[in-house]
Image 1 (tube, helix red, strand yellow):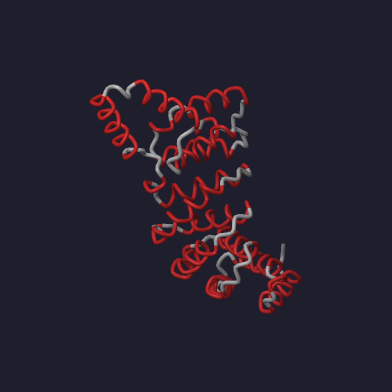
Image 2 (spheres, rainbow, N blue to C red):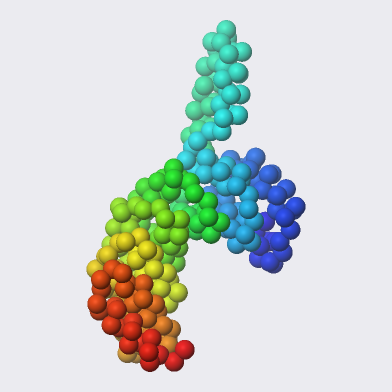
Length: 256
């Protein structure tokens, strides 16, 4: 799936076969393959495979499907008269549950960002998954790089998922890494915070200062001016006169 996406080769039938097969083997995949390659591949090619993404969400939140629960219940009924076998089965289930590679607590920062982006890119809503993503993300926030931070909040705002605690945590991390952000990442970050209604002085102040310095140093000045103008437009409804005035002035004079 990843190779086909990289080559921009989209075939609905092949994609469906791959999705069906992958959904049955998620427990064999590590998060970096599931999130960074499998989920990304289907999202990047726009392949609509809701059953696969539901299976991914269930695996990440350690949620079993109804069919699995039914089978487990039937097996327990059959083995009720065999105490030793039941005990062994219970122990094996505990071992298997503890070794679930796709439990979200095993996810790294890039895994969390990639998974959130993939669901948002395809417009898939999964409240339970995004609650779990937010909780796990906050515990490893210092590991997020600028692209991960930008993609994470972009995904939440794109799907209209509001999590003030997550945005607050991201807001604390942004100023520390502001010099590492690319222009597109800064623009997406400002857009996401604006759409989410998070008027974070720390975030917008850091973005404004960084863009002004890049303009002053003639570093990507055209892109920086364009990003500032975009931020100004995005902030018009949030009552930020500095960004409004800056955006209007730059939009009128910038060469693009």
